[in-house]
Length: 358
Image 1 (cartoon, helix red, strand yellow):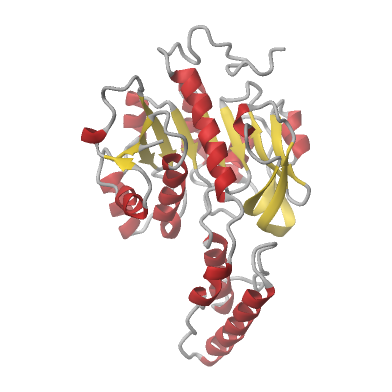
Image 2 (tube, rainbow, N blue to C red):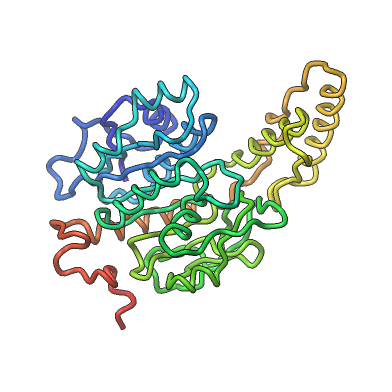
């Protein structure tokens, strides 16, 4: 699904150099019977992960089935504190929510955010995020919600607040497809892996109490994929199929450094089902060196990413790409003709994909 580089966002240039299909406006298939589609990316991630998150979601979009050409429109919330570098990046390359509302979207992705508190309603972004969610419900065919965004909608719209877990759920976990009828899981393995990284959880019982449809679940960490009652308007992820192979490794490095600096109470455990014993041994040795350096006030040892990263297997990207491709295929199916808000003429708003009527 080629992405059209309609601005100079560095993520687009980097993805193109990495081999993702990115086309210039002049190269798009103007003579084909394929309409352009516009997808928003509300990026709520902190500064350090802002551009990496762009790349992860843009890559999933750009590597999916080429049935349409996509313009991706990144934006964020002013209520999220930013440093000077990230603020400059946003000012140069991101769009305003007012512009997004004025021009409209066919689909929307809302990322997670780095929040540890259980009660999201106390976060500074709560009110503006609620405005985006309410607007999307009435004006966007389908919204994909990632992790914290899923938790926010479950709280904001369905009255099902997330619950803090006794231990962090992080690692790569096996999942099983529960509803094989749904086109979002068409032609994917009935068991597949998804990374998770979260302290909080919304349970299957909470999703079902809200009248939502659970499609994919893990025996270890619960629901990954669910949808709104109509099967499309809202798509919920609790896991992170967009993660790069080394995303969890970088998160481990961050937490280990925070612990060495006294900013994190406990030393982080290794992510589940992610690192082999040899790689764990390398990291344990680095962590011991880190503790000695922190205690002695000497230079911190270099993180051994070059020794560990080549031996990490990615067991989730292909399925994540397939699910995103299915999601955009469903969106294309519903949005390829003139809109009649909130869904188009001839489309059942309670079952736009025609899978639950019978």
